[in-house]
Length: 136
Image (cartoon, rainbow, N blue to C red; front, side):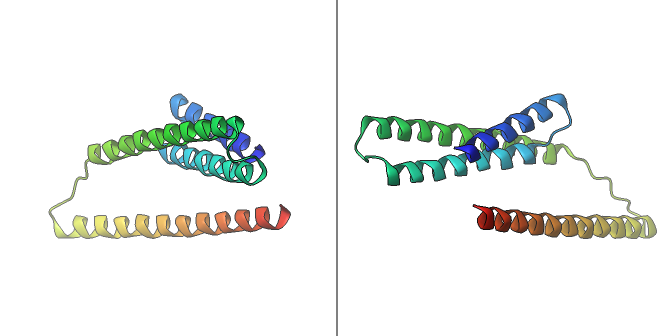
């Protein structure tokens, strides 16, 4: 339950940041997916400990399904917003050889930088998951 609460807090912060103009859709998507997965894990834990056919379990399952639907809808909406932003970007490409080559080099530089950042983020995620697994 603490994980769900924590993920909801991060989701609210991500949504607030996006509304305020300093957040990103990617953080919102990631936060929503985390809420959904933590809720699913909580439901599994409850199913193990509770009477499967009880009214409480049925209501809990209904609530869990509602959370899943809501987070899925939020993720879809945020992904559509990201796609629309991508379509709106206009890239100006020079038709001359030298400026075109410079643009190509700059583009490759950006790609390599983003790939390095992605690798670093994946390594941080692995470390966090390992820490959580060891501590809990």
